[in-house]
Image 1 (tube, rainbow, N blue to C red):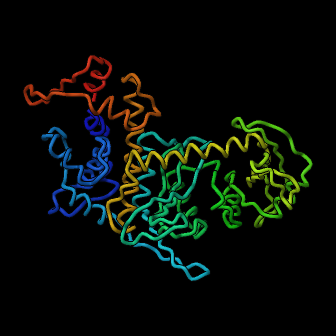
Image 2: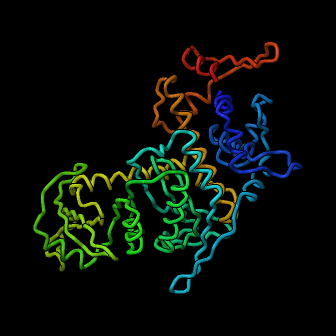
Image 3: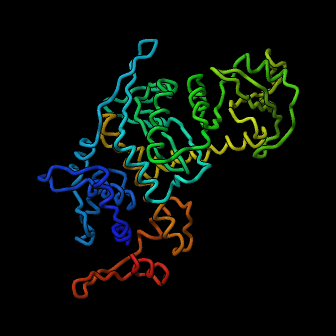
Length: 410
């Protein structure tokens, strides 16, 4: 049913057109490899070897694709990988970064094709963050979290990943941050996607980053690092007003602040700290938080609420880690694991697309449902295959006529 829906949408052809052909003697296309990973996740698998469940149970009923072995899938990741770059920081540390432009273009085009991103939307929000993924891999490095792993940079729009760069675990989030943003925005603009807003954490609190986003006319909202200068100016601000945001009573204010080549706006908010300890700089017992923005019109309260919606984009990491197996990377090296991260982000896009269709026919399934609920309510439906002439007829063990009609229309 799911496969027939994707076949009717020419998904196989789309994947092979985007990723290109493999050598004729290998016997499997990239569509076979990618969809096998997607379907393994849809069946609850979290390891490449779990594809054997698909191989053993489809019995030839998946038309226009062949399910490869786990070894073939892993070789496909290697073929799609690109060499890493090495960037040396001022203190002499070498950071490993993996940029896979081809697969990121595929990811963006998938978001558009499966109607998860609308290039005509004039209010798109670009969210960016780094996600530390613990991994005991050969080239994984220790991070400040005192674990080995990777630290990929991920851009999301409309709560789906649209751009992913692999990074080693000890790579400082500020390292080459501007270069990553430039590549991400260039890839998006190449597909006609022009965000109006950008939200980022303090890893992007860099003068060259704010200069760049301001120059592109994007309204940015970036967490600003606490500093004596900001705290002093905040205390001197005379426009503090009381408000409540997410059940937290606080005071908000804003003031002008030159950062880089331009004068921007600092939105400050404060609330009592839990210890009651007085600060020598502010002479009060309050926590101060700051957001830097080039938006002079939005009120302080609305700006803070808008920035706090970064939490929605951060939930994407939870979904990718636990539903689409980012926490189970299969390879020993960053190059191939970056391919895996992008393919599983593609699985997320396909899932959101299918969820929009099946949620109209399955009770208890919403457009925001997690994969486990989808598995329980759709994947686990018992079906019997029979033949009538040259056609496969599927009989579902359900009295949900809407779902049966949806399957028959695929």
